[in-house]
Image (cartoon, rainbow, N blue to C red):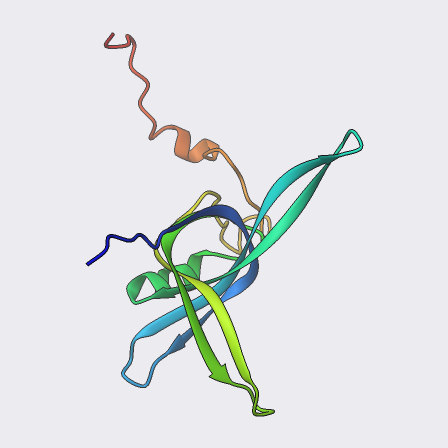
Length: 141
């Protein structure tokens, strides 16, 4: 048997709110989109070229993602690339590639609705969380 690897690792921004569904057997499945960018230089000007990825998460993590992740958030994920096909309503076969994520790590936090009444992201801990960070008086090296 030949050795092979099917692994995707991406960091990007969520393009649509996660959609949570349940299979007939009761398994949770969540799907959402993530955009990644690569920059190219053309005529002394940098341009971002986006790539859009369909992402699927299963089980307890799917339920967690549907409650925490929102459009616009930045996250990192690892998983495998999966290809599937289905019959469209017009009778044609459709093919789709998606990342089946094993690990999803949001980089930004979602504020509760009572804080500032709108969705905001932040890259650093808020002041009320800074007290939990311990900074040693001396570095051990």
